Length: 86
Image (cartoon, rainbow, N blue to C red; front, side):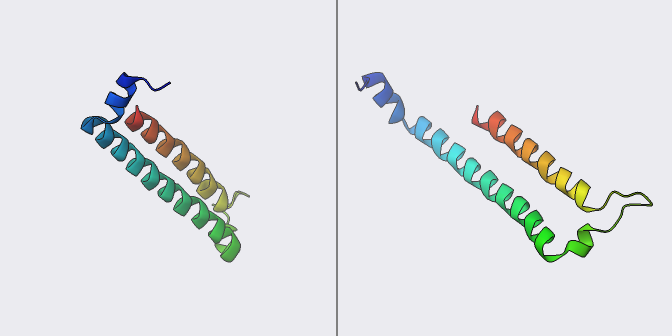
């Protein structure tokens, strides 16, 4: 069930270059996401006092916007990957 056209496309140098660039981008963004996510988890584990600092006079602590930043960062790098991979 091997189509000769598929084999021709898969062996073309431009296609191989495109695949390599896409894979490199995916690995880079994955590593970046792991650093951000596990950095936040490590901050929770090892420096609770820093994250527990209130912002202003309200009850919101510093951990809330940092956590939201992690979520927004995830959405942004996903959009970057989708845009570049397409």
